[in-house]
Image (cartoon, rainbow, N blue to C red):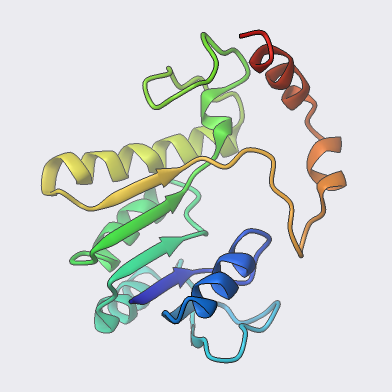
Length: 178
């Protein structure tokens, strides 16, 4: 498959890119090209996703089978990605478990759990989720929304992830009660 990745050099996406390459997929990353280089065999399209017109034009020109957006942080980003990836076979939006907030009604939580984001980051991610879900219901935009929790990888180790937000401890305690 030809897979487009918005980002591709970050904490989560570096591993995704490597795995997809190992599986024989054609990978195209769109990013600013300012941090880590993409691996050999990856085609880099350098640009700024906030230049919406250029981003959308460049992505539409590629005709992807699937796409993964690692850099969608708000409703405006999501709206742009819906335009950029119209016609794609599958689209993965990387959201966050933070959209659920810190008060859980039940564990394990699923897609039916109420969203109660408490930070701007989480509220903006939830707004992006809403844009994608609306596009799915309106025009069958083929979105899959993933909500990673604590992540670690080659860019940011586990210590950085668990030291600034201790709400994960409460989630683990509650999850082990059932």
